[in-house]
Image 1: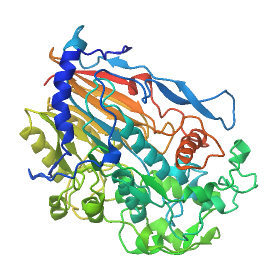
Image 2 (image 1 turned 180 degrees about the vertical axis):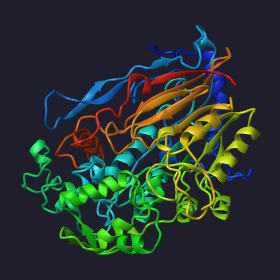
Image 3 (image 1 turned 120 degrees about the vertical axis):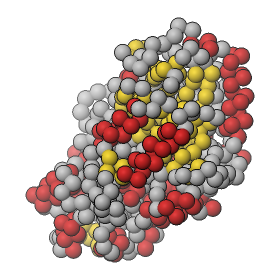
Image 4 (image 1 turned 120 degrees about the horizontal axis):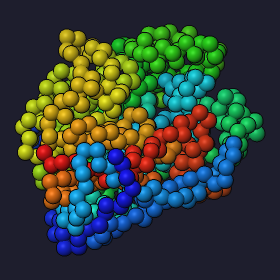
Length: 572
C-alpha cells in the first residue's frame, strides 16, 4: 500500500561514484537503435545557452512540485487567481516490493529522464478544429489554447533549469515526449513543436500575418472574447477582459531549446485529423488550407456529431466531411494558408530528421532512415548502460482516438524484450493500457490483427526485465502496478495542472529497484499579472486560464500516490 515518506536519503560516496559515471553518460547526446537496427547516430553537443546548473551532490526539492504547486487563492465559485501553494510530498508505494530499511544508504543511480506528454500545440485558427462542440465536451475548445506554444517553451525552460534529478541528484539523461505533440495534425504545429524542443524563433500564427482570425474575435458568446466588452459565457463566470491578448498570443516567441537529448513518441493527434479520423481522400488537406472555418453549429447537430465521434462510429470522417461541405450558417471566411496542411506519418518522421531540428540530438530524436524505409514509427534506444528504451506507435490508423498495436509491431516488441532479457527495459507509448481498446483494422494492412492494452500488459508481465510502461493520453496522473512492472501515466500540458514528470531508476543493492517520479510545472510564475503579456506572462496566464476553464476536470492531478513517488519493485 502507498505510504508517505521521503525515501530519498543517499550516501555521499555512492552518489559521487554513480554521479561521475552518469556525468560521462549524460555528455553523450544519445542514439537510436531503430526498429531493428543497431546503427547509432549522434547529434551535436548542446549549445552554451542551454547549459543547466551543475548537478548537486544531494537530492533537492526547489523547482519541483515537492516544493510548491500553483494553487487557487481563496475559495468559492467563479474565476480564481493562482499563486504558490504547498508542495506534494513523496509517497512510497510497496505493492510490488517491500522497502529495505537501509536502501537509501546503498542505492546507486542508474538513469534519470524527463517525460513530456500531450503538449497539444494548437493552431487555434485551423479550419478543421471543432470548437463549436464546446457545449458537448470541454476538450473541443479551451480558453487557454492560444497560449499553448508559450506554455511549452516555458516547460523547456524549466527542464533547462533543473539541477539534475531531484531524488538522486544524478544528471538527467534525456527528455521523452509521449505523443500528441501537435493538436490538429498540421504542418504548422509540427514546425512549432520541433522548434520549441530544439531551439529557435517561432510565430504561433497562421493565415493573416497581421491579425488573429478565430473563434476568440468572432463576437460569439460561446467563447471567451478577451478583447471585447461582450459579456460572453466565460466572462459571466469571471474571466477578465484583456486588451491586446490575441495580438500577444500570435507574437513571435523564442525558445532556447532543450539542453538535453530528446526523443519523440507519436500520438493519435499527431497522425489523424482531429485526432480520430483516418484520412481516406484529399478532402482533409483541401479543407485544412482553405478559406472557411465553422464557428457555430445548432446544438442538436453538434450533439449528434460528438456522440458519433465518442463512440468511434465514423472512423473515416464521412459524416464530418458532409457537414463541412454543407457550409453551415455559422461558417466564417478566413485567410487560407498552405502551412495548415496535414502531415502524413512519413512526413512526421522526415521532419524529425531535418538537420535544423537536431538541437542537442540525437539526430532524428529516435527515428531513423530505417523507419522511413519500413514505414514504422517505433524504435529502441539506449537509455543508459544496461537500460534500454522502447518507443511504440499505439495509434490505430483505421481511426478513432483510442489505440492498439498491429501484429507486426507486437511481434517486434516481443523479440526486443527477449533479445534484451539481461537488461532493464522502459517502454514508452502514447496510449494507456485502458485506452487501447480500438481493434479496428489498419487500412494498409487489412488482414493484420490488432492487439489491445490488456494484451500488451500480459506481454510485459511475462518479461521480468520490464521496469515501467510510461505513457499519457488520459491527461491525468495515474500510476498502476501490473505484477512485475509499473504503468506511469502523466497529465497533459494543455489542461491544468500542466505537468511533466522526472523519472529516476536506482538500484537499492538489496534485490530491489526504486523508480522515483517527481512532477514539475513550467518555469512560468505561479502568480499572474493581467497587465503582463510578455512571453513569461503569457505562460503564467496559460496555466491560470486552464485552471478556470469551464467544464475542466478537477481530478487530473491524481491521488498523492500518482504524483511524487518512490515505486519499489524486485530486480528481475
